[in-house]
Every structure is written in C-alpha cells, then in structure tokens.
Length: 272
Image (cartoon, rainbow, N blue to C red):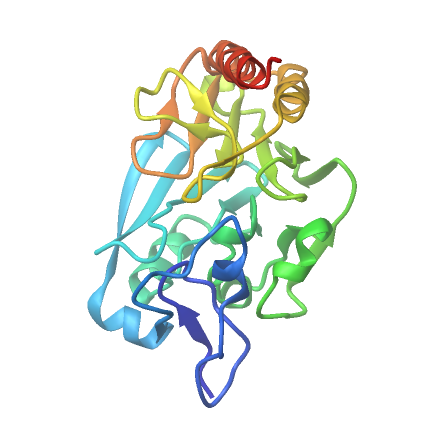
C-alpha cells in the first residue's frame, strides 16, 4: 500500500489504501489547509515529474532542492564531516539520482530535523541509508509515519556527530531545533537553523514567529531566550531553510540585532 504525502506540506503518512481524511500538520495553527482543499500525492508520482538540484554553499555544505517546487519548498542541507555526512532537514523527493550522488559522497551517518514542517519523507531517507533519524521528543505527536529508524531525543542538546550538536530552541515548535556545526564557515562555526531562526531576504537579519504563513508572533521573552542560547555558542555563519537564505559571515551579530529589533517593536505594541 502507498504512503500518501500531503501536497501542501509534503508530510508523508503511514501506509494506507486511500489518502488520509485530513492532514493534522496543515490543520495546526502554524500551517494551513488551502482554500481549494487538501490534496494528496505519493513519492512515486513525485519521481515522475520532479528532480533535485544541488548547490555548494561552502566546501563541505551542499543544499538540495526540488524543481518544480514541492510543498513548502524548503531545502535539505548535506553536511560533510570527517566522521560522516549528516542530512539536515528533509525534502520530499528522494530519487535514484539523489541516492547515487549521496552514496558517492560517502553516504549518510544520520538525518536530523529542525521541526515537523520538514519531516516530510524522513523515514524514506533513514531507511534508504540505514541511519538514525533524530527528532525531538517534544514533537513526537507530529510524526505521521512511525518507524524504528526514528530516534527521539530529549533535553536541550544532542550530539549526532563529533562535529555537530543539536540544540533545542523551541519557539516555532516545542522541540524546534538548530544544528551547531563547529567545523562550518572555515572553522568559525555555523548554525543550520531551518526556520526556527528565519534568515530574511536581505541576508542581514532574522525573523522569529510561531507561524509564518498565519502571522502569529512569538513573545519577546521567548525570542530573547532563543537568542541568548545561540549567543553562548561559537559560530559565525547561519544557513536557513530556503534558497539564498544564509548569512555567510557575521551571523551571530545579525541574530542579536534582529532579536532586539523584534522585541523592541513587540513590546512597544503592548505598552499601556
């Protein structure tokens, strides 16, 4: 039986003869059900009409993105380290060409997710390469396809490779996480942020929201807590969830400026 995928968010569901009656990820207040209604597809159907493109963001960091766009149109990031490769966040399309390229680059040592909007076909990736898929336990209820490859981590940090550690920031989701890659940016360190910390189009600032499409903000205290957590880490570059959403240098100072700008306006709006 097929594993149906939601066309809006590209979440893959447990196998079934017919599509699910609803997509809880889209029905959540952080996402949305399109006015035209919920529609479904399968990985096999996507493979017939889509392909993946590759972009080198730095020598050991590759972005993978599907064309035409699928679902939210996020990118996955392939981090290459001496101890193995990590796939950060998932895209729906895992095809033969993508598998061949990744195996030629040394395969995967693991997959790690920032939050449920990018879970997508994470089980397909984990099973294909025979590796653990790291998901924060606080977001377990948002997993639509359970599988033994999933590793539910708890607490505030989780080392997944000697050079890469996951940090729970919360905010967008309770288990929302970023990956701290100590070897990134030529040794200056990098954050892989998904949209837990949203790199903005000017590539000089970041945004913070509970829901981006539904425009639900986060409390200033939450944003300051998230920024303070990241300020304690050693990093300079930050790579976001979407094409051309990265700050190659000065990312830590950009985060501090952006958090203060956000909080100043949010607090001004609630002044008596």
